[in-house]
Length: 452
Image (cartoon, rainbow, N blue to C red; front, side):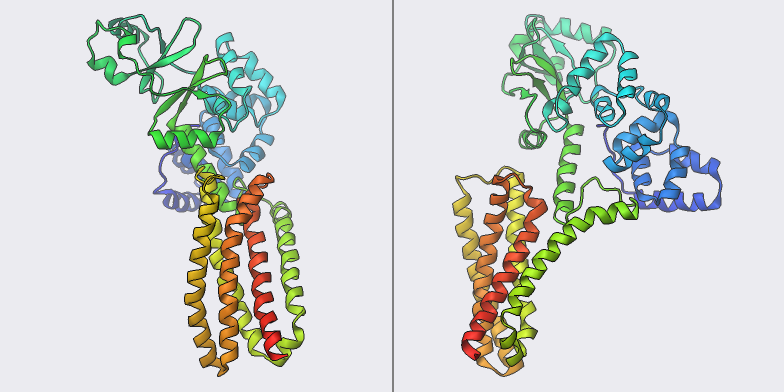
């Protein structure tokens, strides 16, 4: 993906652009719009309601359309592509780098893909087909085939003369990739060493073999973790035989990290991380209805538990007043643990080797917090209702529910991951059900034993 600039002025751009649209001065609007970076144009389009967005898209210069489409969310990009003519889509691909072009072509009709491939020379077509042959969320799908390679037996002086004759190097190149004659990966020569070492030295004498090449099938999130831990700017990508295929650059990894963060945040609300903010009402309602239905089912389960103790609640009205306190505290405590565990799973920090220790630690935290807040809530309840029995009943319920919340917060995401369900998507609903049911069952069950 192209490099995305910071957006400190995005709100100001939105206000200025909206005011310009309302004034009707389309010439000024077009000039303002096309003076922005493609990523800023995309951000602006995502922020506009449908009618203003349609007009703004018509004002985008054709030479910017490809880059703008790449920065848009999946939903919005698909909607705009559907309304574009095949020749417009082909024109939008001009000038895109191989990895960006591969991302773009995954969303266009097959006829357009064929037309683009026919318009390319044989070498570029082979490079593009190599990227398209790998899933989008793997190293092979992220890589750019535009690389600089050198042989191990040449001198640095020869390499320098080659670079001068070439005249340019690919963006974000911090090292040259050393390969054999069959393109098997050997190591890297940093540009720093190339410029500062004795020119008579051979590439073999200065290259480093510390960095292992990335397998093309490595998942994108593992690639991002590797870049983070090793402070990489670029890294070579190889196939199963060790043959060089391309390289991954930090700008592509930043996109992966951002997408992972968006996914985690939106999934916890049952939303798609690529959902268009101004998508049609019916479409948005349909997507959210499923999750609301699941939540409704769990709410009925909690209500059914409360209904089992209807007679007790009628006898002691204070129980109805205090029920939300037990459920709320359990829900918050469980969410804290759940968020910690989901983050640990996403970062690869949790496995069978340390899961038991984490569970023990979280149970201890839940017990300690349960005791502390049980004393607080118990004293408040006694002062409020003048009944010591209610105080120790809610205190006991608080301790047990926070322990259950800690247990659920650790085990639920681990279980969901084992069965192939995204913990970020389903974890919060399951957790809320557990804390509500356990909280109500303990609180009202103990109260029934005492008062009935």
